[in-house]
Length: 184
Image (cartoon, rainbow, N blue to C red; front, side, top):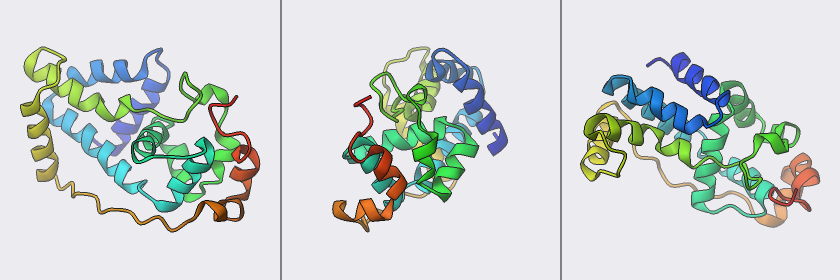
């Protein structure tokens, strides 16, 4: 699967009532290598967006951001499509203008946890005809990603303190500092 094909799927999914379910169904019909390529792209983008400054932006948006929440935020960011993903990575303050209530999850947050498990669900269904978690399929997926060249992500050292965020991200702070997402 080429990067352009990946982003086409993401864009098509955005037009579906249940985007992650739709992606899972589409992927489960593809061959195993295409499912692995999709997951490789997800993981590559997750690593590319593993930035201290982006974590700070997410922290402002949601008045705090745990490790897991940051993962789900990056899943949401990928689901917004290539153009938005790249704009946000280039300028995190773009989020201040981009985010509207319609672009958030049901709870009013920029999170998409389910996108991060679409490929493993599709692969599990393809290999077992069942959607129940399967340790062997998961281990095989991790081995295949390693063979494709996906390296383990290094840790991240946050280069910000909460009291510095107003100056570092003035647009985000102005919009969300006193009214974080989830408080619409």
